[in-house]
Image 1: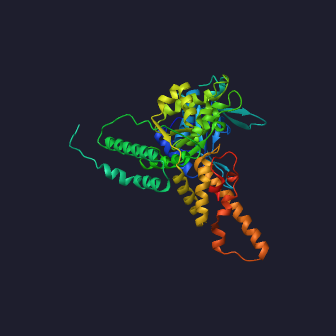
Image 2: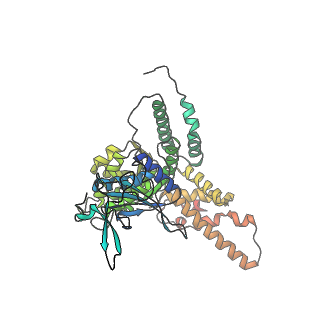
Image 3: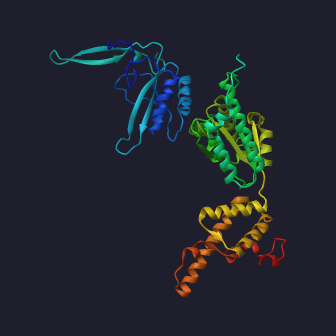
Length: 144
Length: 305
């Protein structure tokens, strides 16, 4: 089992900290907007570390001036998927960057079962390791 | 409650520099006396609300949604920009930008298109002012499947729930806005300030034309002044008169004629032009307008020259 002291999934920024409050999220979003980033909301119920592409909740939000717009979208997502992972991502469109520059989890399921380590014996006595998320044993939409 | 606490009302106004914006409004906008009075009232009201808050007299945040009615070209958009600045300085909107939209930006073309479109516009306007021009087009009673209604419902919801995040200003002709409010009582009850923009008088329009020319670095000679006054008098009586906008268009056309005149003169006698020639509009530039071609105006031809 992969664990860390917090007993929760740690991906992106601030994931070792206690959950950010809405006021703290607003400050982060405001910081990004001042740098000209475009925020977007994504959600998933498959938190495997190699699952890079989460589901988009609406379009990325370009040309916003104030964090209230992002919070509005985030709250809509929380209402729709209260028990899934939700993250905010900031896209920097500057030439030669053109990628995600901020990303942090803003919503988690109530219980996070974590990951198991699966050992597969192959040729000789070689062992291959797989990280398996307990959460994904059930079909999509019924996890957590 | 401590009744002895005091708060300096004037300090609030001074600190927010709102007087500066109001003075600028007075200086730069010609006429519009009732509008300026209303805006001063609103600014005073907001300053007082701030003072009350400082003394702990908590009240629900004031509703700031507004409706600007008036004929085209009476300065609704310009005043909306100033309003955003006033609200920003007094701390009622966080960013103070204006997002100007019409029906096309809010209403989608097919089922399920409207909600995301409207929400996107709302998100962009958060922290500032959402200015909906010709808002009555949102509601089309003749087509019961029109998506405008959906857009109105989303607007209403956000106007009610996120009052401190954005201010909505609706704008349009007076009579059509009245019909719009009659068929959407929910909208009407959520808008606290109705401001009516009067038409400009001839004298005011002349002053406006002077200010516009000043900005464009042109000037009128004496005879052109007379011609311009005459032009305005005739233009007002013609259909599709759009106040300051018509004046701007007339001046643009006069500039075109001036350019043509200078070019023709230069090609005739091969003389160079100086700054004065380039910035002077003469009576002939204005009198060549279609407006002076008799027909549907009542003025006698003698007054045109």
